[in-house]
Length: 252
Image (cartoon, rainbow, N blue to C red; front, side, top):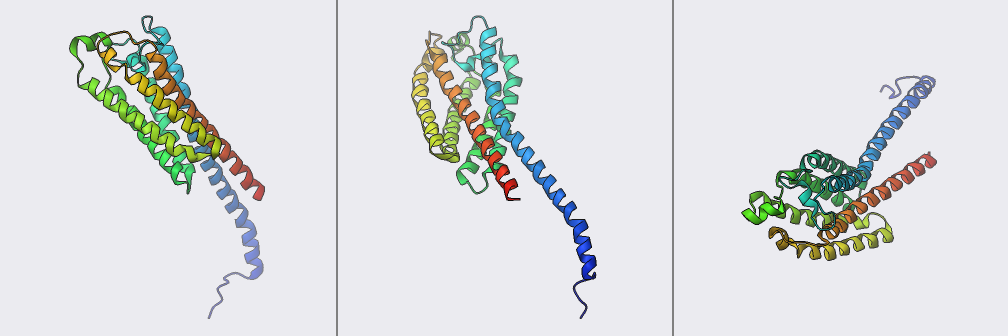
């Protein structure tokens, strides 16, 4: 029976010396490339909130008759709003970054079931946010005259679904990093319930084109709280990934 060793022992050793370094380098390059992709996906979790908040502040500032404190965020992209054309492409970019961050979370989750679900839910929320501009509300004065249309009804439905997704994302994401982040997530959910219920009471006033003092503040507390939570989660995951990379290099 022929020997399984095709080459003499000395030649085998020389071949291994030649092949193993190149194989190790190739594997190392693939790992570095994979880590870089993951890092960029997680950074999207920092960019998305920043783009949303900055675009909201700019839009409110350039519309002279808009009240940052008394009008809803949705009115900035309502049918007939002067800021709608500016916000549509910006929010499309925000949605893409949100989806990318969801893929990053899903990719990093590993065996962490809660984190995997968080990533999938965030991808779903990004898809919903992508569709949202196709169902805008009308301006208040038009709602008062016409009583609303199909897009106004769908806008309400999408808003409700969006809030539901956000609460699920924060709920599952709370398990991402220790006790402090969990309690921070619970505080964010509590804020959502309080300010969300408070803002919901003003919905009939919007339809009737009546004053809604502090509606904009209450809505933005909720929205900005979620934006901050997303950025904090991205920061936590980036730090965790950095520590894992450091530990793996130390082992080598």
